[in-house]
Image (cartoon, rainbow, N blue to C red):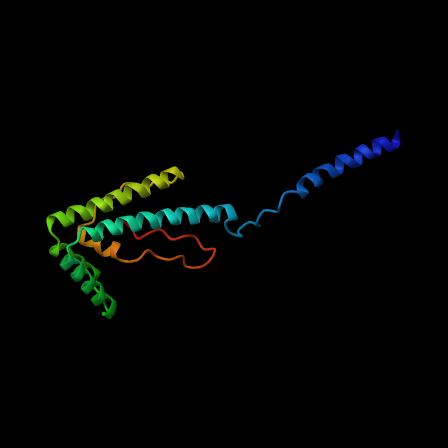
Length: 163
């Protein structure tokens, strides 16, 4: 009887330890996101890239060939200028656009913003609506730039350019 009680007592002591032995240890506090969190962040980044790429394609498709060439010239000048003035470039781009191009650019931008807001709200991160809609020249300049890359492996994914 004593052996039976001792066996149950030993079993009661070892049972919780055996149950926890199957669970992998969690990351120590401050160690960064878990593998599942990293996978989710990469998935979200993939959605951001997809939305950005679709909007960029729509915006570029709205431009005439002459306006695409002018956009390329403006971006090239900014790249080689020691002190570029993006606001001046935005104004020049906006001034060259036809009303139809402006309308198509703003519509593509607003649709992309709506998709980002919807995606973020599904994750429980409500984004406020923008205070103002940027002019088409600013949108064109922002969306002409490539999507930012992840700064390093394991780092948080970067959001797309502000829309």
